[in-house]
Image 1: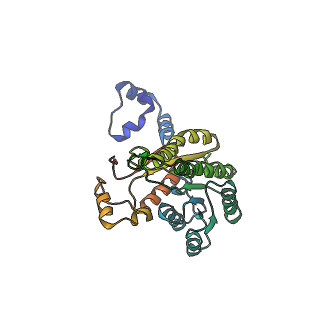
Image 2 (image 1 turned 60 degrees about the horizontal axis):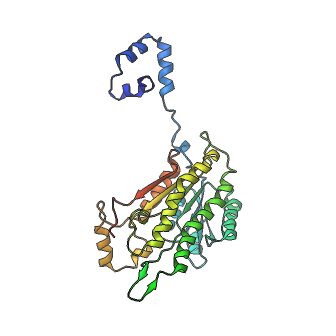
Image 3 (image 1 turned 90 degrees about the horizontal axis):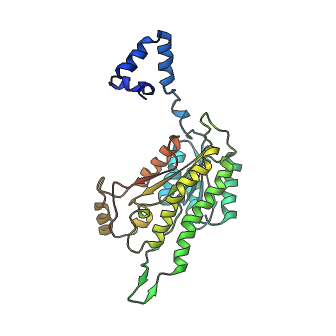
Length: 305
């Protein structure tokens, strides 16, 4: 109905004749009251979404790559962060470098007891859990069948990738939201936010990526149903699907290979900076209307076979 779109009048559009006549018949007070009803309240930057300086986030895979950039971003913005990563990672060193608002929880994301301990650490040290960012993941590059060697893809390797990437992500979600549900809701009823990491491989899987693409597709597939499931508790779920980023995995490739990969990105024609991923994480946390969505962060790349 035109009547419900009075905002068009303020954007240089003219309302239909009947609507203008109805407006003219209203008293001045009634017109002001109607204008007020259409106005979005000024909530203030600090009131939008989850973000505030006292926010507490869990970050899996937080000792390197996209996860590390996310931890550093959270700390720089006044939040506290718990790094969930393997005992052999640089998690201890990073947490010590970032100070009191950062802690390390040695974690295998597929372990219920490890993740519970990490959630408990966040609660004991910082009082709550507002945000969980799932960056932990693994990959293998193996064809479905090696015809030269008459050898099928290892089922063990396939299962391991699925277990870490899908089950590990879900394990963190299911245990983190139990703590988020105890948070005091804001004016919108918002209590927390889950941000998962998929990949463009979920859509443009390449040769040898059967396990990896399946695992990332699983993360994409569970985003909406979990968002709907947690909506009554005011907990949002959003997934980022990154393209080619300058992570330790790619940094180990020869410079020529890195340059070749960068040229495949339409614009900007370079590898993504992990800090750009981290900026999107905080933007999602700040925006309460982002929910149940998968966001490609890829410079418009569409991977070739």
